[in-house]
Length: 433
Image 1 (tube, one colour):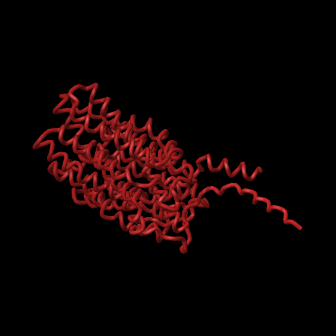
Image 2: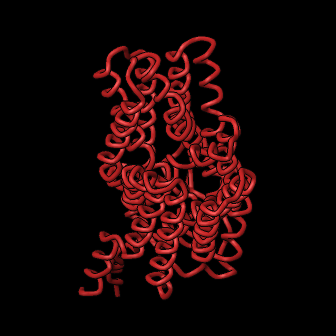
Image 3: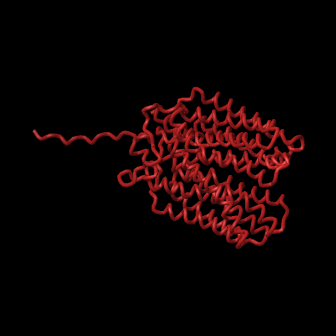
């Protein structure tokens, strides 16, 4: 009885390894927030054009996108923990090197190599989170992980403003130091963790082709693309311009609008993660896409500050509903003991592709039609992704309908679900003598 009680407790409590990853995620996001405001200005200090300064930022994203498939394969070969620590170390070294860049081209090279390290630790971090999280808590762990990232994004720029008054190079050195601290924390606390240990060489591999054969994984690619387009692309590129040109407010107010979106996201993440673990992944993803899509369309038609802030909050709430559930769905497809690096890499690439294409396409619409058209197209993409999810089966273990729609993890036996309590066998009727 005591063993059974302890097992139930373990299934309802997040392990310490999850909190280590969340803490590291916060440090990484906060550090990125330090350098984000400084990077364009630092690039311009080398007497280059605005376009050239923008290329430095884009080079980081392009390197992430190009190297993502290789990162997935490295996870299968070296294991999540090694790739994670190596990726953070690469970003730390290249970021510290940026502080000593003597010209524009050195800065561009350092940032490009940093993008390679970034995709290594991003993909491996999700894989490691899947590995250490009990199956019934996947949604909650994803929500907590996303919350750490968002809080870091909010904290970083606040600290970065003070560093810029010291030197344009100071944020890069501080971020590099923070990343090395994150490396030390993760290495120390996970070095003997059985949960974070690499799977054995004979563990089943969930190939990308196998995952693409499951409709729920295809649906996660659609929702990841739409979310990347809206959240990481259009929100950052179009909202500041809309605030200045349509609402006629200064650039500082754009930061307020982005903070309202982030606040809506944060207050929803943990609740939506719990709901994804109880009512299922599919309902939360569809609801999140509908709310986020509706809020994004509404943004383009607002003409007052109050309505704009409310629409931003609604879009943030929708994104918060979506993110933990879709990440948990990908985890369900791979399973706790599967090797699915390329599957995770493709999921991450879908968001990155959306983040690259979204600002360009929305910018063209805003230039030739209107901001309303640009936001409407972005919102409609989320609604289309919701339609893709409608025929997809539920992936939450225990509700997957194993005979009709088993996930690849269930087919290959890489899913580890809590064992059911054994039921006593029925007594045989007495034989007549």
